Length: 299
Ligand SMILES: O=C[C@H](O)COP(=O)(O)O
Image (tube, rainbow, N blue to C red; front, side, top):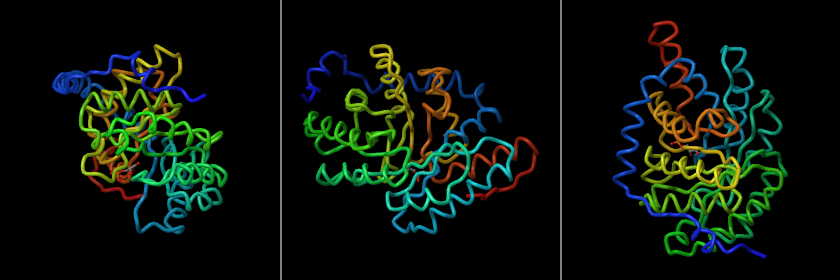
C-alpha cells in the first residue's frame, strides 16, 4: 500500500522563517569559513565533485573526453579524483565503456531532466534504462508544478516509482530549490523526498535562474540531520548549479560541516554538482602550493 505523505508530513514541524535562515547562514560563514579554507579542504572538495556537462550540445565524444581526462587524472595530479561523472542517459554506455578510473562512479540524470514534465512511466523507464546501461547513480527532479500546486502525494509517488525503477542505483532527488521560493517549501520538499526513499537530496539542476544557495543548503542539511535523528538513515546532500569558485565550494562545505558533521564529509554522503568548479579548484590549489598564478584547464 502507498504511504500517505500528508500524514507523514504532519509529524514534522515544517514552518521556517526565511529571515532567520538567512541570519543563521551569515553566522555560520562568518564563524567557520576562514578556518575551513585550506588546501586540504580544497582537495577534499575536489573529491566531492560530480563532474558535469549536461549541455544541449553534448555528444558521445564529449562524454568520452571527460572519461579520458578522469582516467588520466591521477597520473597528472597527486590528489584524489572526482567522485563521479554526471551525463545524460544516452551517454551512459559511452562512460561504461571508457571510464576506468578507480572509485569514480557513473551518474546519469533521468526522469526527463531538467523539467520532469512527462508521464511517470517515461520517467521511470529512463531511470531503469540508465541503470541497466551502467549508471551507478541517478539524478531526477521532483515534479515542481505539482509540488507548488500542493499535490504532495503525486510528487511523493513519483519519487517512490523512480526509486524502485533504479533498483541498485543510488537515487539523488533534485528539489530545484530556486523554484520553490520559500524556506518552508524547501524544508517540506526535503522531508518529502527523504521519506520517499531518496539516497541524496540535491538543490538544483543548474538550468533555472536561481540555483544552489547557501540558505537552501542550510535548510536541506538541517532536514537531513533531523531525518537521521528520527529514522537512523543517513541521506546524502548535493548542492549543484552555479557553484564554480573555491570560495563557493568552501562556503557550501562550511554549511555541511556545521549541520551534518564529520560522518557526512566524504563523497559517499556529500557531493557537489558542477561543470566549472574542478578547473578552478585545481588552479587555486596550484596557487597556494606553489605561489604561481596559472590557470589550469584540465577538464
Ligand atoms: O548537476 C549539476 C549542474 O547541472 C551543474 O550546474 P553548473 O553548470 O551551474 O555547474
